[in-house]
Image (cartoon, rainbow, N blue to C red; front, side, top):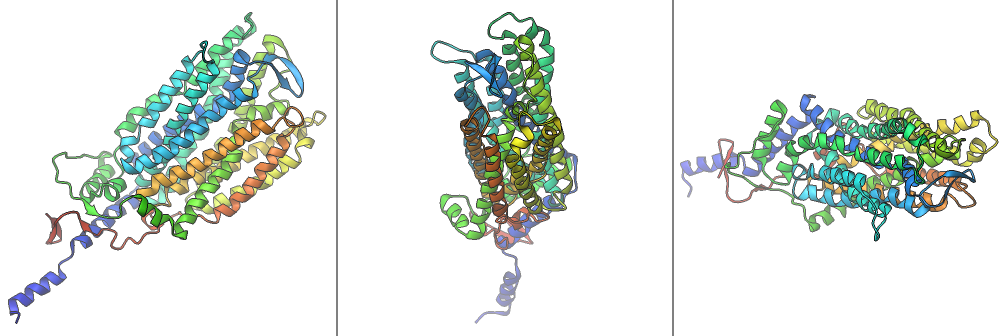
Length: 559
């Protein structure tokens, strides 16, 4: 029979908190500190460090839009056609032009999948910066590439643009996940939006640099006596080579940014270190790791194929991945279809084509293309990002994405079915201005719409152990759309004559925008919800205990 003393002891043991309970409470308290943290300079640092990568990405991706025209003058074979008329300049043939434009999206697709998975396996911090090193090396190599008996300069350029694309692909899941996991709940949308908005500035600066280079080389172009436009060869190399400068500036900060507490807590299963990191990051913006400290691992869900299959075999989880992936795929069909071919659109409506010939025609054509792209970027791309910034945490991600897809469907229907009436050879300037206005409006509602939200939602809507992987899958789906768009645009645009099929391509874009409306219905609204709530996993009992033996004494876990 139990004695009175043993009964008291048993009662005390009964009320003693379990190890798993205390660990759960510590995890929740630590996460609450991050979710409720006030806006600080550390958040500004995260935004700038992540944003610098997107600035570099956009510069390197969209600079080729103008550089391909420069490459055509130097290395092109066959006369360039403008509205069916031969000009004195040259252009890359269809395969060469497609190769230099599609190589980067292909590399990006592989980079998004590989780095997305790797960041969930070895850590965000350990990978952050390596993708930027790849971009810097590839940019520098492109500026120095040349030809040899066994390979052409265009072939070498395509290879290096593919390698650069791998680095750019790594930047998408890493920057998205790092910014989302460091952000507090109430500002998470704006912080991620601000990071992604650097893409607009990268696009604008690429065109601005091209315009400055063109102006600087004006006399060289006009006085050139070579048969292959030698000054233009310097121009495209400078334009592409300068893409490594912002990457070099951001590299140090990327290599020194601390690991996210959520990775340390949920994947490395080290709650004690994560708690210290949160305290240090919120106060001094740095984390300190004691190599001699005893590491206490907890029992929590771990990433493996069986767990991944179990998680995404549930429709509530799978539909989110389908929604984010298809929405990004549909959006990038139009976004990259337009962005990488804006010079063709401008020339089709007569803005990029020069009425002059010879060296003067080369200069005028390059200048007109730069000015036209500057107008498109300033009038649509950049404003769209920052209007979205104002509303992303008040309206929510899902309403903005739905609105964007609906309006883009209408805009592309108008541009496609009204193409001949707005861009034909006998139309007046008002009709052409209407087309340019619709083009800018499409750029605006891509960014004040699904181009921004498709980046943000996958960085929020999945568990920590799969957040980067799922974002990589979603982003890679987008780049698959970019590849389809670029290949389709190149192969279809001249059916029936030079650029005659462009109107039907715009109609195809409208169809994909329509499908984006339905895929948006599959995603959750992530505004104002914690990442753990959005993971669709029960957080009660998320921690099962410690790996090894442990006990609780006075509310403290000891081993």
